[in-house]
Image 1 (cartoon, rainbow, N blue to C red):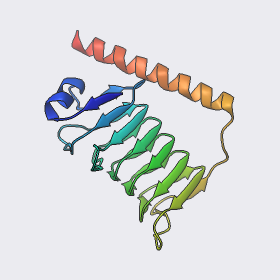
Image 2: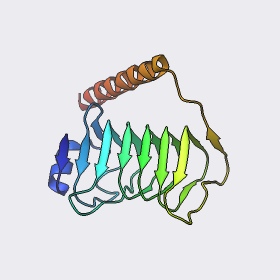
Image 3: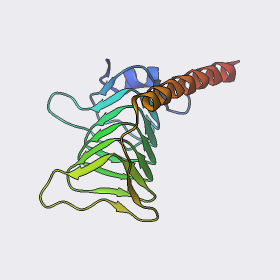
Image 4: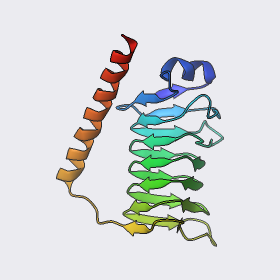
Length: 165
């Protein structure tokens, strides 16, 4: 697991667009970063917490497997599981969702299951789209999607290399 404890460590890992590409790694960010420091995250699992505190994600997009943090405010979430406090974003595509009180999207929510942990809690809201509960994917489809993610990550790395030339 890659552990990032401060702005200096994060600055060494992000590209010129402030995107973090650690596609095949789990990442733990142990401090509250700003939108100017980090925009999009590409990793397996993202933990925004230290031993005693959970932190907010105020970036653009999360592309990975699992998100474990406090509040998510961003554009798109493409991953597996969301375990956090509240979600406010544009689109959500995932598997299992567990939120505390609010789960709101401007466009759509697509997932296998969604539950609010607090009683009472707000039901999920999609302002311009709809909530769609999807059937669990087959193992083969999951495997193919993972391979596609790996190819996209490699393409992004090559693109970054080409832009440096």
